[in-house]
Length: 246
Image (cartoon, rainbow, N blue to C red; front, side):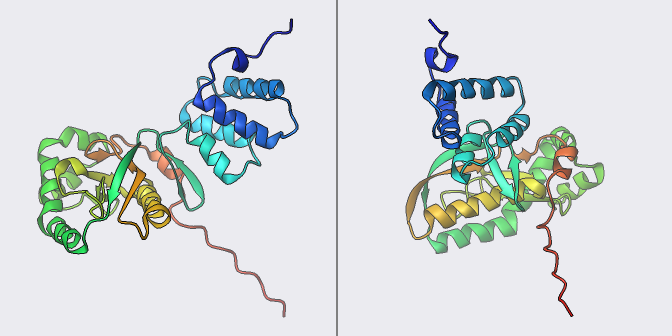
């Protein structure tokens, strides 16, 4: 008897199932056995690779998929994939947490926002500087920037204080809901993703179950990632102007 493929004999995982759907989409006339063999081949190619390498391999192998199918595949191999200026940004240590988004009354949200702007942001920054100097330095904060933080100021324009759960929802100004986050690309890509969720899934509703990207801890990223940050465009590429024929 011919040897059965691993995907047939073994228990199929959710990743296997998504890969099967993707391969079937690209090869609609292929038989089940051939598709399972292709899935096995893909799994062998990505075995032992880190999330970023896995994503690039999958994008190359599965080129031509519908965008929604490609996203479904890639999301199986990284905790969070956002998009910034047309480039996929993979943050594998960001949790996608399911929350029951309940729209907060405008009056209550504005009250919390004013408290944050007047005192809570400053208190959070001071507390970080006093109690987490070692962690801040590991994240790339300099001695000069640390002194600024002890006065309640942001270390530089490269950093921001972010609400993990937004004030629009059930988020508060409590320390466990705040994170000092580097603007590029982390804060940009997370807020872009959150705004997209609000626009597509929440707009017009008072309550909705959604998945939000939530950075861990109170400092993000927790270490310097210069090479990664350089690989992400800092602004949307400008379109070249067409020369008018005289």
